[in-house]
Image 1 (cartoon, rainbow, N blue to C red):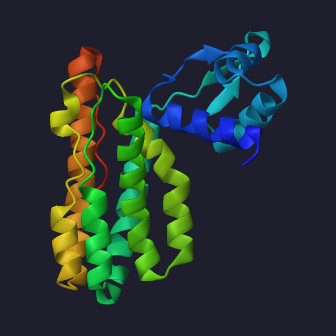
Image 2: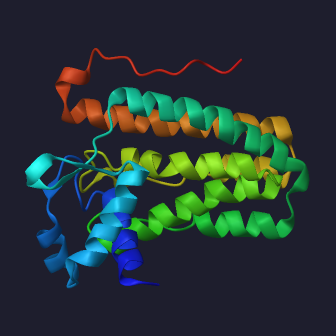
Length: 225
């Protein structure tokens, strides 16, 4: 792995778990000092992060971490419902006992919000779990679409998060795993739907507790038929 790739991976992980807050401003010199590298790998990393939509240029001031809006979050939830519910339905007939063991192991990873490495391990396990299901289904296009959107979804999970919020920040995959273990397509689809809605509600509840101005704003995706 080149220095540019290392800086890119480190910055991406830091943005996802909130070590770099949304809206945070930095320049190439700051980052070069932070990662003890020259500006060349920093430029490479920032170019890739811009392509990912995770940072933006702000003129002479440098760069800023892009901010997710309520509409962004709404759109992400709708995309997850379409893609991940379908992936569960397709995967159910193909699930093996080994797959069930993999999903259970990934879902056992816990989080300590005071520890950056713990936050990263939790998000990695969460993403691996959600990518494993379309992989089991054998649908590469669904897998790629989920991968493209899951980084922003993970970022949303850490918006305004604070010590003490671990109680609500759990993988909560037991129902999904149980339905997949029974090879139940409809049950797995419904379990994934409930999981996504519960995750949405936890994030919205936390945002509303931190920002009272959001109390009257609606962020409810269309209900599944």
